[in-house]
Length: 479
Image (cartoon, rainbow, N blue to C red; front, side, top):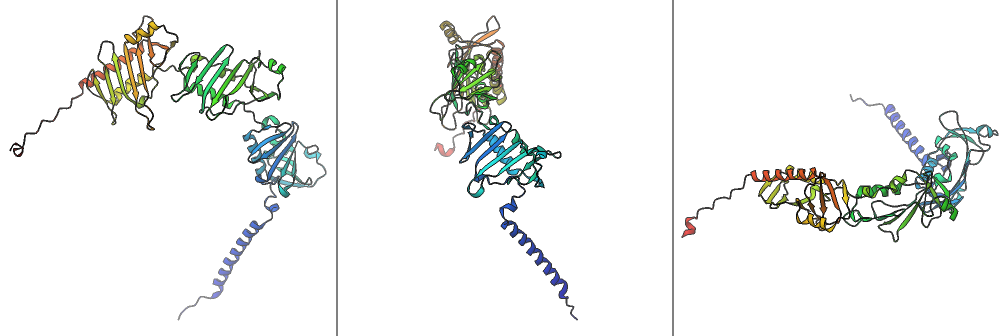
């Protein structure tokens, strides 16, 4: 006898699944087709960012109007000026995410919520039929850091997100562009600093920063970049005046200026100049030539603009990359030259005074000590006699060449001559590409001598390759 399942439970299960699916899709359809009012009713002020034309904020600091032009925003009232992008983006985000936490309904007692008069009002100008919704902000709510607000339409009081509390503190200074000069420190190729009677000129050709004035010498790239980065990050703490008069310029030490910086960047058609005024109490004021406002700037910026020439110049004697050296030739007084050539597998071949090989760590020790050499002072105007004596009778002469650039550029090289140790415990070194002579502790020459001795010893003791014996002539070949 075959048992048959009763249809009742199976049909009920199918009906239950079908009903659940109908409810799900009906709710999904409802959400998709819901009016905009329903999907945005929990937002404190509803808008679509693409529909925004203008924003007006009024509070105890005054009134500011921002206007959108494409993706950019400008301030049009109380004056025409640029905006701080981060500040405006933060404002827009806080408005988009501001929510109604609790609705209190209509009430005639606006004063009890700090809404008569309000602490701040926000008005949006929207395209199309969006109109101009206005939200008024009142006192802080006793719970959760939220705020009382009069919602758009002016009839309903609600508790809104804490982020809207910033509306009461928004002011012109916070929303406007406070940049002194927009630049990219890595693209600047010329910098002139004027400090009273002193002028410092730096230029950056392909091989890095160079001092051109008051002395021609290699510059310290990180220090120059740090100075330019300080200019890039410089922001006004206040605007002393929007349009300076001759009296303002004298009062703020800008006529004549205490210091000036002229900058040329890759892609710019002209140089741009900023002027710095330093008053008796140490306060700093700045303006960019061609722009009217005078800004107050942080006092500690003076330490950057007053950087000494000695700190702007490179003190390292070795100018090449240790791990890009291809050959090094060392000639010590009265001895044949020693030539080290890097091999692809990491070792070095030694030729000249001795022949053989040395391990990578032996040559690296020499290059490390060379890279660690720093001048403790400079003779920027050496006599011809001093220069000639170094070239004619050097205690050590080094010629170093880097491997060729992968891009096909010429390989860099450096030629250094070291004088003998002097009575004062110092040694003079000249980079033949420059006029100045560096003064180093005499111990620096002693370290290089020890490194070269180690190279000679290891290369001399290295086993020499024995040529293979010539094979005996075969009987066939002798016939």
